[in-house]
Image (spheres, rainbow, N blue to C red):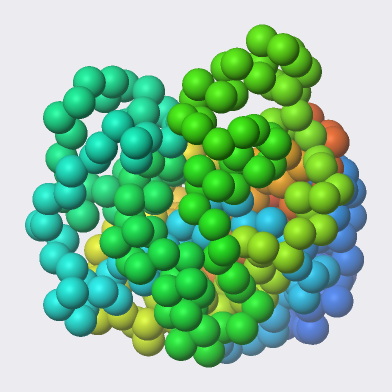
Length: 330
């Protein structure tokens, strides 16, 4: 009987089943926090989780949630917010065309990899789409420049009342420093360094103590979840800009094995991933079935040398368990 129940629920839901069976539904979050901590062991390193209902009702689930973690590409949520705030103020326009110069290219899967010839112009809206759905680094650095640079992005975040999230570098600088590459076109310098040291490829998925302990471009899970809460609740941006960022994040094409990995088919999730070295992250909002209530969740992993697949599996299992815990609170 138990085997049939376990199979039907799925691995990520088993914890919630036992919470219900033990009468923990409607109780405080201690039981689910213990389960999250257990699941996090599969990721290796250090895992931080912050989750709560978007409407602010009910308990918060917090595990290592006040510790700082490298954001990696999850900081693109803050960049998008700052850009859309500039759209709201009239300083930028979503339809505004932006020329992508050869010097703007930063290695990633789309612009730098596929649009190899000069003559690229994209609208601010399309740059946002590529940054948030495909995590395109060229689009990110162009948008960060349009927003006024890292300090302006951090300033916008602080203006939202979120203190423990800072943006210090564009992706070009962050990747170059992580890989300890000399100045110059990132793709070329990486290929040259790789020929001298083939182990550099492996470094991209392994922790680096200096990077992991660097306060730059870090956030606590609580801070990231608070920023997402303000954005999705319409407190940070205009109604139109809020609609744009929510819809774009719902189209995210990266990290299918992370937050969405163990959710039921058809689940609505808006999220943004981040990956570098020992860090594998995913942050976003999950729409619960039935009444359409929404759950914000931020999962950060740092200092892990486990295979990326194991880190992603831990995120997926944590997300499913937390999602099911909140379903049982009604």
